[in-house]
Image (cartoon, rainbow, N blue to C red; front, side):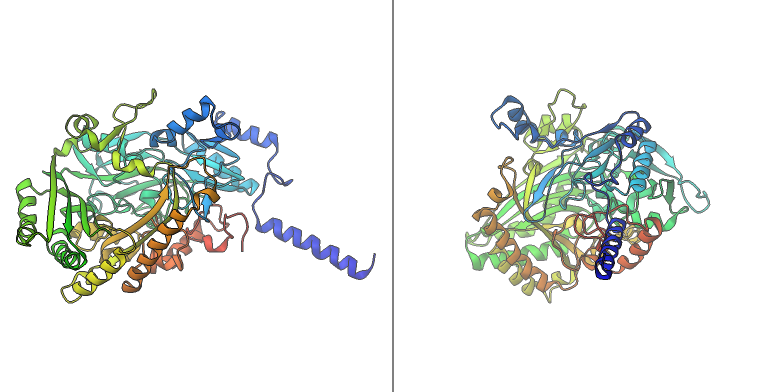
Length: 591
């Protein structure tokens, strides 16, 4: 063998060894765990090692068989979509990702199961995925050739009339009412425990099927009344976490403070696997309400005037702790709104809107308005019986045979079940754009953007104008600080759930391109007018540039240091999560 050939062989061997050390193991490689190793893990988790199956796998060979037809019907139910380890709320994103089943999944029932899976993945250098409810736009709870920790069945919830974080002292830390939720608990279960049973309010998400302890809360988490009670992350009092070394850690304001800070806003599936989370509860407000309506202008010039008037109303009367949810500036020269209220009587709501209605009445037909107000008994806010009796069009009951009592989802959320996304983009709108000096420029910006697509403003996802309590508690978390100077979060998305059996190529239609181009054009206008505003990591563009700053701003460097402290080898990876820039797309190999 010549010297060159020998050197070439040696170099190749070194390259293979280096590659193997920088990449996770694949099923096709000799490093993949043996059958005996998987069998041992199965015994450790009491036989709950399963093989995930995609929800429409039964349709692969024959789309007309009975099983396929049943599956196509089942995927329209978000509770069903959480009941199988291979299912996920979103099915993919054009030219980005698609839902793919893990090779194996540990169907965790307790923290011990989670620790066993973490230790196994670390020992065998496996790609690890964490999924609870599966509500995720960015494909973070889906990956092929991986081991999945599926926490769906860890749904125990405990109410505490007086809770004290472990390691804290009464002199410095007052006891408060709280609930402790398991990793797989959904908000409907948390609300039933806190509000329906104990007449307390817990700050969670609007969608009933979103996980209470998962990526929603760990990524920040906004609900209808976040301007009053703060983010979901701000309400966290304590977490139990399995870290990358397999140890079970308690983190709160008195123990493991850095980890506690990072988990509250730094993103789910990043610093460890949260197996329990304790959330602060609050006394219920005296009033809850829902105000829906549409204001129509008779042309573009009139619509511009309407935008100015509405933004002024928002800045002066609606951007405060009493209001939540959203209004939308639409392409068809209308403004629609779906607004929740807290601690405002029906009479107070009427008085706030009266000046705008009077202005419309005097407009000589340039505008028309339709509104509908619903008063909601606070203890019935999440009670299915109340909604089915008085407002049945707003809810959909889970009618599966094994459904738990009281399970339902909001009817407007049905369109997102089994959604395939063309795009999903968001941007915080700074408070300064609503100042009197800037209101006309903001009007022009929004009018021009609305010529391309509808512009929804999620007002509860901007904490400018929030209560002092919400602001102070929020700033103690790692959530992007840009949110505290934002009046609202604009979210624009497009996708389809009407072609569940279509290929990515078939979904990439002219209509998809048109919707994508419209949103891109509108967001370009909004981004130019909001330099440095940033966005919300849980509801953001898959292709977000400079995502570290956009998602976490000045908090990112500290988050990265904590990530390196608790997970130096990058066992926990997800797309555009803290530390993911050190990995190639998909998280299989280091850069």
